[in-house]
Figure 1 (cartoon, rainbow, N blue to C red):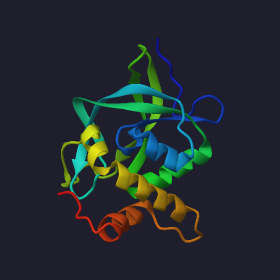
Figure 2 (cartoon, helix red, strand yellow):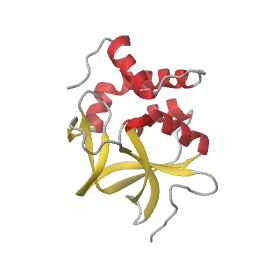
Figure 3 (cartoon, rainbow, N blue to C red):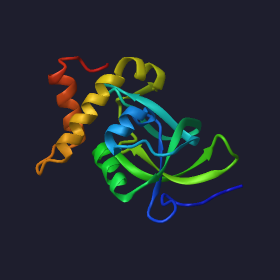
Figure 4 (cartoon, rainbow, N blue to C red):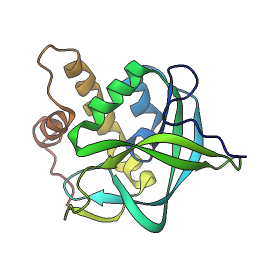
Length: 176
């Protein structure tokens, strides 16, 4: 069975494929103040990369590859705006088709694709389980700081919040 909904789900809601830090319920909850229903999914003909100097991944189209992730279902317009701000200029929200793992359905969803396809800082495969062990707690703290910043009239973009958090507040070196 094939379901085609575009990025827009029922009514004014959206479905968003996530594959990196947003696989962690703690990060999603920090951003959206809830964990929406999810469905495990596969994005075909894309690859998930590590990014030099960052703890989160990027995806780009790569033939005959696939990215395992999940779809956040029923995202409101306001929540989508928050995700857009969180993904910042480094990513472009793109309509893609995923295969749901639990069913033989295809679903049209949004995904945040790395904006620079020729970025020399993309390398190797990013691993969620490794990220969770090493970076989850700090990333949740950084995300909380981003949300506080977002409420200010002159808020900093997420990339600037990330860089400030990882370079100054924790005095931790960035990953190579």
